[in-house]
Length: 342
Image (cartoon, rainbow, N blue to C red; front, side, top):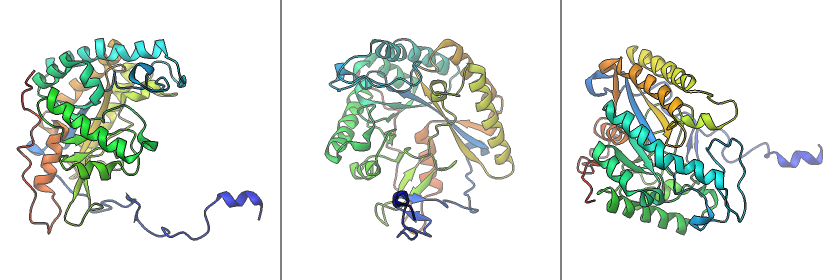
């Protein structure tokens, strides 16, 4: 055996043969997939997610040690250590200055609800956008305090960031967030979310087409996961071999929705998430593709329930709470429709 073989795991490992280990579950529902009865007997619960991150990204002006590198028109950009990246800052500013308002106009004009994954620091920088989210009746879920990669962030700092962003929501949105999507979490993030005690769900998972419960944090303390997506997501405009124009984005979303509607008609309703970013699909040619998809989704009528993420979570609490735990807790009072005091 060559010396290079040492980099491979031993032939036997403590997790060999397990389907649930270390927070992973590679089987999930298996062949016993729940058949949710969505409102109006819809075949698909469709949720649009608007990621509001601009002003919370890496930047020396924010006290960071390097510039931002992810999800911009500069595909493959690298972080610049100890210096500012003028073009990157400007591209992010487009999202909060122009892209947000284009998407706000599109969604409100069509009376389409959405969930905002909002970075706390970004909310603090644009109170006018906060007021617009509230007036539109959107759910504003937490996207963490910073748009950081939390992989190596220590537990105390991440816990404080969660606490801080909850308070920002209370101050600027008028109500605490009930959903959490850290986005770039570590293996301890969910533990901290559950520990905080006020979240109905988190979306730091991509592992299913339906919500599911985890019992990893206590046998009598189920935690709901509402999976998100990196495929039906405009981030693919900012990666190699991704979407090149709005009609490609629209076509992919249409194909996904049509397939899921057909599955629903065969007796297996699902949910579908669509990820949006102000600085990406907020550009006019891409927004045109999103509008085309929205018209297509609305053409299905009651077969497609376009909803907020907290509505999906509350439906799952009411109709799919784990058996043997005495029934689901009351969640209706945890509404994200309270008016801001701003």
